[in-house]
Length: 298
Image 1: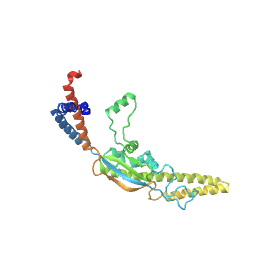
Image 2 (image 1 turned 90 degrees about the horizontal axis):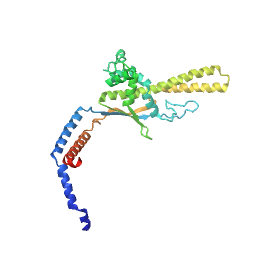
Image 3 (image 1 turned 135 degrees about the vertical axis):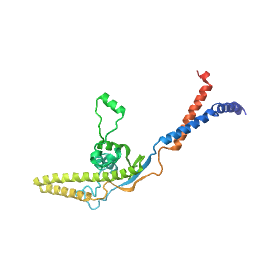
Image 4 (image 1 turned 60 degrees about the vertical axis):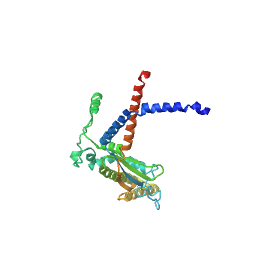
């Protein structure tokens, strides 16, 4: 019993009761919650719903049976690059060369303009610079670009399209958040295909250059062993080209084509309502506390 006396439960219960009646059970708090609901409704109505659009890819690792290391270092485009397909795919996806390819197909117009595929139009889409951009350019003395270019499309891809691969996994996820589901699905599908094609074409050009320079060395070579090695290199590069000039995937193939989530992932309606209610209620309680204890506080 002495232990309970030390706790002084009655006094503590009275203090808690006074706190509840004085600071929590106040009509002002109900008003605050009502205002928070109105504010939440306004935020939800003015927010743009964002949908998750994603596609699942898998590394196109081709078998190397029957191909000697001396004859060829790749088979069906599968290189012996220790970085893996994800690094090469992501690097090519974010490159200027790929952005240029997409720009020539009119994607710059679809992203920054009205979708007109006329080359004269999408090469002259004017940029809308903010007032702060113009003031900064005037003060610091540099010029702003007047028209959109493939560099802007490259920046758009880097800033909005994410290629991700979990550690130890072979699947690659290409995803984005967008208010326009149809556009994002079409864009990601084209982006995946063009990135793979560009990767193959880059290797074909590399092999063609190796063949051209090797032929020159073969023409002046006097040593039979060196000539045989050069001929073997030429055969190897022709083998690479033969297996790259097809419609088969090089880096990745699509497991799940681009698709959108059924419901928007943002904004979170419940999170907005709860967080705004907590904020408004906190300010209401703080105001009530200050008002009741202003003489002691000041």
